[in-house]
Image 1 (tube, rainbow, N blue to C red):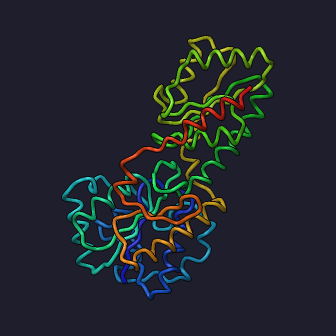
Image 2 (image 1 turned 90 degrees about the vertical axis):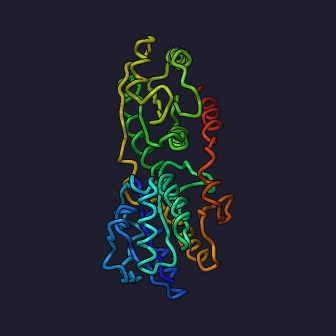
Image 3 (image 1 turned 30 degrees about the horizontal axis):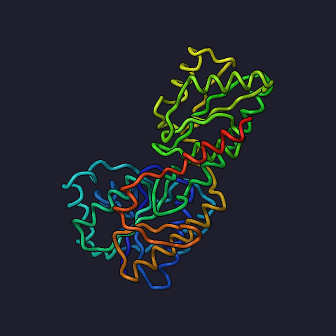
Length: 327
């Protein structure tokens, strides 16, 4: 079987271990795994790793388990949102005799994979590579655990400064329209306040909590804000808190793209390897139009439409838990 593999969208720690797993799992079947550089954009430009018929040797991916970023490079491709681009991608895959395509990425990547299935007869399986953890069909996405760890390490350092100066830090993290990254970072680092898209942010309620903390003698406050929060990012929320009479001196920090990089955490390496092997096996069982994931310790396949149709709401309960811990 000739299998194309690409990484698309924002890079996530664990994409490289996933690629390694796919290439080495393919050896069992004598597959020809061809790397496609720079995601869907590279596919449309026929930018193949070493050539369209060149199989990536398993030795070439040695050591990828500990490397962050995307070995094959990644990009975003607007043309895969249009019929013309999808038809062109399908034609390229057909002309070069690909039997299957494995895509590693997030929401946009899987949307492109789903739509490609309408124009191409080959098999397509997606793998959830995104720090946002915003996809149904899996408990965790590849890269999420590392991004949480990175956020916690940063906040642990900010806590030292906050405590030294009786300050409050408003820290903005990634996550798009999903609050899982924000809530897990906040819970793991003992933050007092969190703002996420799933729960309406009320400035007056936050001010009431801050005044209560002040009265209790709390010396440092950390608030985590998901970038997709309804009120806005860290800067907007801090401005609103100042105008409403925050009792703490405040500073805002945007962690930004630092959360995407770094050595993948063991949890991401393990998940990436399991899903990479599972995806190759699924192809040889004739599966297509699905995403590989892990739910309650079990490897599962979910239709693209099911994965993309719903929105995760796990952050809601996490917010309640953070509130319980903030006393």
